[in-house]
Image (cartoon, rainbow, N blue to C red; front, side, top):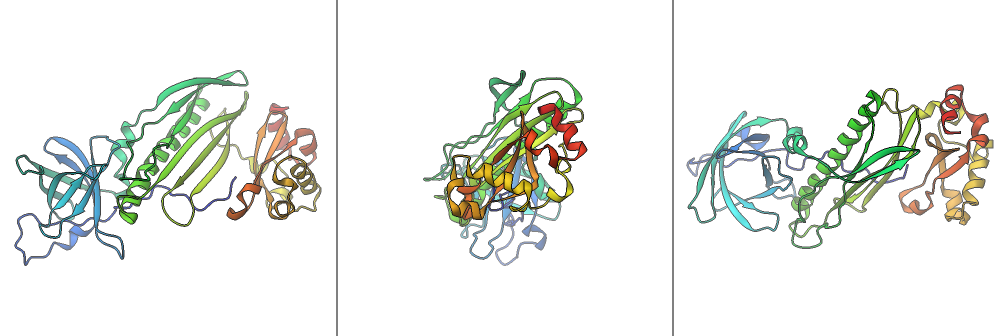
Length: 370
């Protein structure tokens, strides 16, 4: 697995809540219960989910909300003069104003159009911060873009919808979120498909949170990027091997990326315990001076990539638990520091070469790949 900075996973940038008190005298402070929370309710008769956040250090107070199961957030920016929240669309255009009041469990107020001609009541109840995206998660449906085959087994390639570009410039317009759905009706395949779908949907939610975090931390011109794709590397009667590629930038010193490979058992749909396939002495870091380590170093150096560079040969390492099977091969995921990422080229060894290093469970599993 590739080395990378910690990726953004389910970050909620607007978890706390700050509410202006609708109709309160100027000298009266907002109730303490209004400074945190997440809400679900209606604007008029239309369902909405809302998050607001107070200023924190250099971070300005800001919020977001969406209608129904929309993937497009409307940004909320406080107006110090009026105590209202200004509603901005993804192009940063003013589209409305919100006046809000709340206590620990309920939120109420009014939405009004920019010209004040239209007004709608707002009512909402507090929900868990982690449930802000729940409605859009439930409504997210992928589209089949094409089909493919591996090992005579058929699968569908899926595309997941994303909102339009956010921000005035440098916004991501090339984000791709794709997934895989295996053909078949067995309980094991159904369980694998459910796992792959959940991970794809979570990646789309991460993309939305990435955009919101960038807007709050770095302003409307903030660039952001987040993509995920899945592919089938191998598939036989006992196992399916899925590669998941993630990359993105949500702030910080570097973008992040991850090439993760997971082997699933098709009898249960659970992840295979590949760490049990190699003997115990190879589960942790494999010494380059060991017999297995020398095989890996030889294959790495002769692989035609960066293995011919001495600094790469000094940098790389392998862990016995980071492996995946392929037809007639066992692939070892090469580890390297972030600065030396180009050196991290995986190494495949023939099954006959690794057979002496396998446990009985490993030999039994890998018989299906011979």
